[in-house]
Length: 571
Image: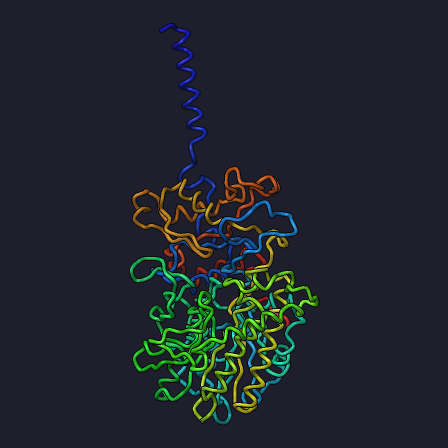
C-alpha cells in the first residue's frame, strides 16, 4: 500500500470518527439542567401544595409534568395549521395554573342559605362541599379535610341536597361567555357565591376532582389521582376500570355515610356521563353496609344510559334509552346559531352525532336534563323527612371545549343550554320538593384551555417527547399522558439513570426539541421560539412526597402570574 493511499485511508477514518462523534445523539442529563428544587421554587409554593395533595404514590405516574402556562400535552399534531384560520383544536387541561383551577361555588336555598346575594372572598375549595353537606345534616365532620361553608340549619335539615357540577365550567369559561348563564347569575344574586374557590389539588382533571367533591378529602387521601392510574397489578388502567367499578376509591363519600346512617332509607343518586363521576356518590353496594344507589351514565358507543348493576341501580325509566328523542333535539340545533342552513355553527347533523362529538352539544344538555328531572320526579326524592342527596354532572361544556375550544361560539351555546337546564332543575325541585325544602349547590371541576396561540402557548407533542427521552435514556417509558410519565422502573434501573435525571432533562426541553425531524410545517415555527423551554417543572413522586409544609411555604409565590391562586372570579 502506497503512503498516499494509507494517508487517504487515515484521513477517511478520522473524518468518519469525527462525524460519528458529532452526529451521536446526546445522552444523559444536560449540563445546564435545573434541579427539581429550583423548578419547584419557580413554580411556587401554592402550586406545589396542590401538586402534593394530588399525588398518590404507586398510582400516579413516576414523573408529574408541569407545562408552562398555556402549554399543554396532546398527541401528534399538524404543524401546518400554525397561523391559519383552522388551528388544531385539540386541548388538554390537567395543568395546575389559576385559569384552570379557579371555579365557582354557589350555595342557594331560601330555607338554608341566609345571606342572600353575598359574595364570599375567602380562599375555599371543592373539598369543602362534602363537609358542608355533613354540617347541614348534623354529621360528624372528622373524616373531612375541607371545612363547612355554611352552618347547620336553624330548623330541620332539607328534604333534598341537590348539587350540579359543570364539567369544564370554571371561571375562565363562564367569564368568556358571561351573557349565556342568567339562571346561574340569578342563583348568585340570591345565594352565596365563593369567588375565590379552587379545585384544591393538581392535576385539574375530572376523575380526581369528582372524588374530592364527594369525599371531602384530596387525592392523596381518597386514592384517585386522575382518569388513569397504576392499578394493583402495576399496569396503567382507567381509575374506574371502564366498568363503573369503585374499588380504587379508598374512602367513603359523605353521601354513602349519610345513607348508611339512615339504614339506607335515604335516596342517593347521580346522573352523570362516565364512571369518573361516581366519586361523587361512592361505592354503592360494593361497600359493606351500602346499597345499590341510583346512577345513570352514558355509554357513547352504544348510545344508551347504563350502569354497573352489581353496585348501582339504573332508574327504571332509563332502562330503555329514548334515542329518538335525542335525535329530535339534535335536528332542532340548526336554528340555534341564527342561520337555517342544515348546520349548527357549520357542523352537519352527521358530524354532531359522532360518538366523541355528541355529548358536546346543547341537544345532549337537554337530553341529560330530561334524565335528571325524571329521576327527581319518579324516584321519590323529597317524599319524606329523610334527606335525599342528588349529584348531577353536566359534561357538555367540557366536551364542547375539547371539540371546538372554549373561546368558540359553540361553547357559548352549550353553556347557555346547560344554564337553561339548571333553571329547569330549580323549577322541578320547587314543584316536587317545595321551594323552602332543599339546598342547591353548584360548582365545577376545572376551567378550560383557550387556544394557546392567543396566549403565546405551545401544543406539546407527547409522542415526540417520549421519543426524545428514550433517545437519551433508553427504552424506559411505559406511557406519557397529558399529566405524567409512567416509567418502566426495571428498564430505568438497568439504564443506569434515575427518574430525577429524566425530570431534570425535561426542565431543559424546548420547542425546537419537540418538533419531529422533517415534520411538515416546521418552517412555520418562528426561529425565535425554537429555544423556548416548554416546562415550568417536572417532579418525581419521591421529590413531591419529600416536601414538608415549611419547605413549600418557603418557596414563595413563584415566577408565574398564573400561579396566583388568590385571583377571584367575577359574578
